Image (cartoon, rainbow, N blue to C red; front, top):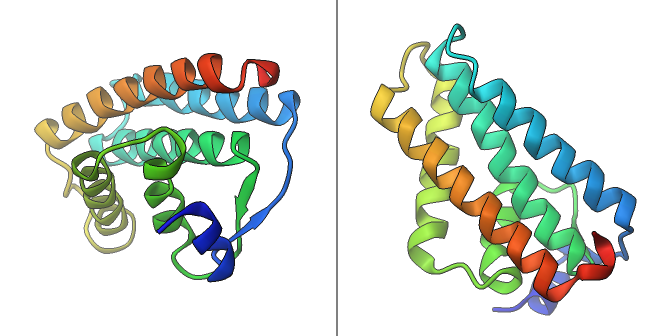
Length: 146
């Protein structure tokens, strides 16, 4: 698969970005990570907020690459999957992020209190690692957008 195959399948469309859009996306990441650091809110909400940062990071890489997801069912999954083709993420990371997505859905729609402190710690660490990776990738491959 490739980003162009995603376009052929109508999961993505080509669309140029701008430095302002990338700045805005990274602002969403910063806000979400700052909110997730607030220990007085539930672990469920902290997990949810951290996952939003992960999704914004994946979207930042996708937008910097000149693509945007279409508004189809599963577009969050597709956004995460594209990390393989944007920043070169390995399958293990993508599977972990997709598992976080499922856990976020359970915590958001099915069961309050379903996020353990270990799961929260795991997504926080993963999100920070991804943040550093995406920012380094941007500096190396798309410095004109920073």
